[in-house]
Image (cartoon, one colour):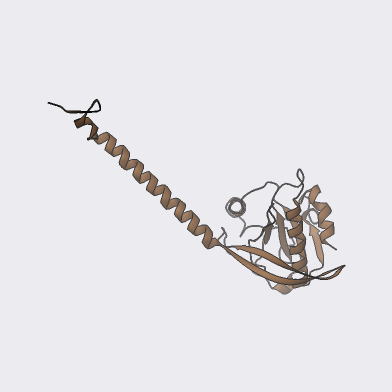
Length: 215
């Protein structure tokens, strides 16, 4: 005789079919796999990023100005064989925009694996939040401006500035970064990408501020 529990046969309430067990096992394995992937992604992401703070002194029209510049160095981006140069060769900063707001990982992957470049095409990238990312060491030759790569530093603003305006935070960080690079490496020439080649980069809405960076 079958005993009932709340109207459900006890035998059925305490036993799962083999099909149901297989489903539960598959779900458990799937959840475990997702956990491992997320853990690995977070772990790798933290390894790839580190913060460095530098205190620098910058000459301005108002006199000496001291400020704190935070640069986040990004490690382990896609690259091939990196070509190096002497810091003494650097005499120019070239300003760019990405044309489309993108993740730095996607930009590096596109440059290296789609374009076939040796590395991501910029030394620095400035995010809309004002965060400064260093994507390549200064000694690395980044393929950001044809015929000028050996002698220049590529600074890129993340976004399309033909269509949009750069944020105040971006401009403030950009100005500080350019002053820092000018001071540290004795650079006097600051140009937009379009001044050296047939391109709209860095966009009309950023070109006005490039002129301010030159001062």
